[in-house]
Amino acid sequence: MAKKHLGQNFLFDPSILGRIIEASGLTSDDLVVEIGPGHGRLTKMLAATARQVIAVEIDRDLHKILSSELKDFGNIELIEGDVLEYPFEMLPRFKTVANIPYYITTPIIFRLLETAANLESMTLTIQKEVAERIVAKPCTKEYGVLSLAVQYYGEPEIKFLIPKGAFKPTPKVDSAVLHVRKLAVPRVAAKDKKFFFKVVRTAFSQRRKTLSNALKPLQKENLLAVLEALGIDAKRRPETLSIEEFAAIANEL
Ligand code: SAM
Image (cartoon, rainbow, N blue to C red; front, side, top):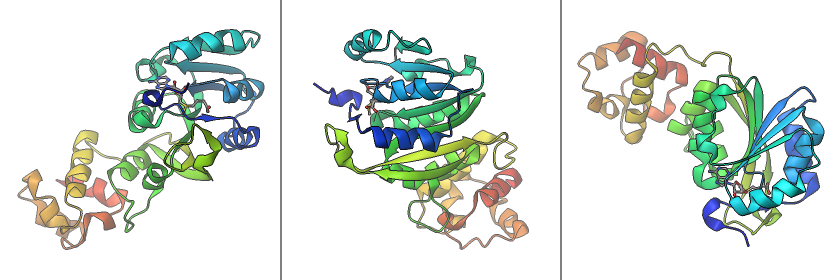
């Protein structure tokens, strides 16, 4: 019986699992971390492709089944625990490949991007709408805080879609396989990362307003002068700004 509260929607189709591995660009040199191995179908294919697999599963019952199921694989380290507490910062260079539990999609992505210095890439099966927001470009309705936050750290790309009928039990939403290559340095040089994200969040909390109105809550007297000096029209809507423009505004303010 699948546990809904743990986001358990399993994938069994070997051709879909094969395409996920292909999309990840995994090689026999790689260390790979899988979040939520479930019944271990993807885990076994990862073990056949990569050098070493670390698989973190929170469900005690599944962990027990997996322990015996995977016991003959010498290159799988199975861990029972919450992935949000896993010390990614301790790992040498690694990739993540996973069909993740959707109830913690953003915490997982930011834990990986912010704390795992040695993360090379992540290939995650996530809700299609969330993937579309992550890869979104300016002037689209999907573009927002999530797009900018992920694109600050990495290069996201939707590799392919998976219809909901491919999962057991069938979820309410379709899925997408998202690949994010982590950038060696963030995409833009924000002098103060916290303030940069504050500017982005403030702007998008009022995305229908003009930029000058949307950024008013920052209480910066030099706002209009800064926009003018940067050649950014104060009447533009926040959703039209590129990440470079947000960084320039934050740096000048
Ligand atoms: N990898 C399997 C597959 O593709 O069929 C299972 C994917 S299922 C969408 C998500 C898995 O993550 C489940 O096995 C679930 O128990 C596990 N999980 C849920 N929350 C977790 C957490 N906080 N830490 C680690 N694993 C978790």
